[in-house]
Image (tube, rainbow, N blue to C red; front, side):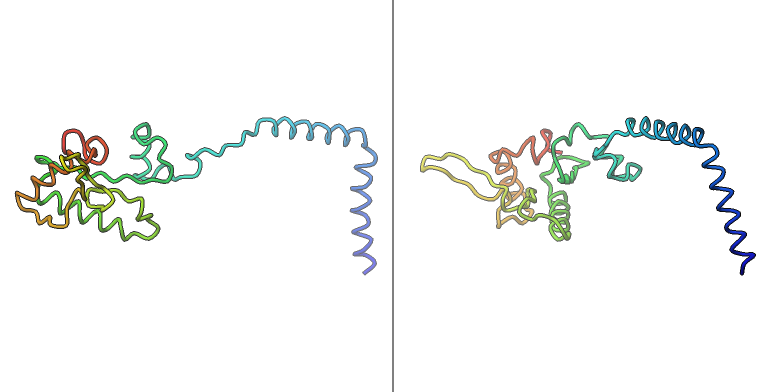
Length: 173
């Protein structure tokens, strides 16, 4: 036991002798390290940018960054576009696809359903001034069935709703 404790004492005395015999050098080294670390601290810039918090290599995020100027000031809003490849949006097939997308998004956990906007949302309405006063209703009425008459009524409602250029593209695609 005494040999072990004397061994530790020898190491302690060596380190102690090294530090205390070279006090000016140790002080200069500590001062230089402190100055270097202070200089490095002045280079730190806090950054709370949105880009630092999201996975920039994810395909959805890459697409969002491509269209960043179009999506300015949306906060935590997600916009989903459904485009009509052939013709315009006033077809039975397109409206069925839009309804399915609307329903799927509606049931996603965490979606603020009161803020959901789609032609299928009851909160999207049209109004017009008539001889009797105001008339209005849902853009897609409860009686919608995909027939030619329903689609024509839908077209008229969309035009009266003020949603062209907002929910509906200017070219009805």
